[in-house]
Length: 639
Image 1 (cartoon, rainbow, N blue to C red):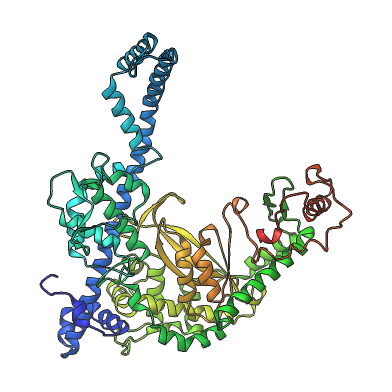
Image 2: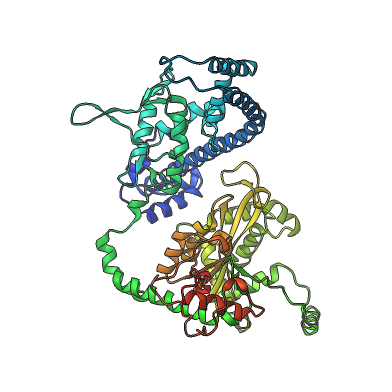
């Protein structure tokens, strides 16, 4: 790979879509088939394929780096828990020693007035002697100080001092990766990369401490510039700085801190890898402001948003205020929401599913009797014939498939790989109608992820046109959720799932209210699913465009809320521990909407309570209006 050089230089400013298309064509061809392609197209395809492979290698390298550092941090936290268990006895012993010292010192008297400075009474000397004896009996001054240092090192659940122990075996590999990859900052903040340069410059040293100044950068006076370590958490700074020598860094801990913070910066996109794809510089993928400004009016019109910032803010505040007033007005009749009159904590009633009716059971029996048993491939073939999704697959070059019967071949291939049966096992049950080589070749050369997404969109569009779907919904509402899927261990995506208990990945689905999946993708375990929620909505190529999206607690995210609103989507996730959150109105000066519904004649203090749910609420709000109670919780804030 090194002998071929960096393919990013060769592709230059070629559009990424063109590079991907040529690379996909070259990926499925054999050596003999590549020789049949004339120059210079063959060279272009080879270079594009090489660029894609190198980008994938860089991404996978970053993934491995992230996984290793995450493992080191996790093991350090687990080790800290074990240390805290062992140190409980040490803490008890130190407390007992300190109690003996205090008891000895408490018996000392005060020096008589007029004695010389520095003189001590007999009681004072005896107390000091007893205190020293108590410390010596506990192991001596040095032993006690070491125990205190050990306890102080992990105070506040500070596990960072333990990371270096687990980082050490991977240290040579980490440095090799850092020297091979080319990092760049996506903003003006280069503090992490400056710290990485500092670490790389002192890799060969064996001494324990290094200065916290930049190795090459100087200020106007010619003095070394100190490193900006503001990116590091406080517990890391407590670990990396030497206590005996201010301004000096403990080299081993500093190395572990820099790589841990580098991984975090790569994950959030503040640092990018040149030539990578998933971890590449996302700022180069953005349109310039001049290009965006010309499209702003059209986007705002399509999304139903005002075209200026002031109008946007005003309309959003008015909308939230209207919702708050509506919720306040409907609170007396809302049997699902209750606000405690004393603590102000809201709670929601648990809804139970009703029992199945006799008519529903009869309908199920009738459907089962009228639906005959069918072969699995029969409805798939009928669906392909009706929706014409089988016309989507084909060679990567866009040429004719050159298959005698493309519909049955594509349907069979989709079933074999979609069900996970595999070509080798499938041909055993197909009585020689197809070979494993044919199925493998069709799947490899004719199907891609974008093609499958477009095929799925054709099925969704045909499904939306059925009369039966109108009984379930109109497609304006959807829900997202993830499902644990078991996979083999040896791949970069699979991880251990704490939530589901297993090893694999998460199948993230966007499902419409018409009971059809609009989009699906496979994501790793442990990531916050809200990160992929917007991707699922934007990647949906079907004509069904949901306006409201429901999600579980994984859909709760502040930036995703903002992006969803800008895209004209109403995001409705289940808020975790909502009763412990602080809710705000769109305007603190907005009226609570309660004066017209609370009689000023009823001013029962809130603490007295009431047998009636509505009366109790009214008494609390009336007391608030007359200044006899703190600001009551508002149901609109809960909404």
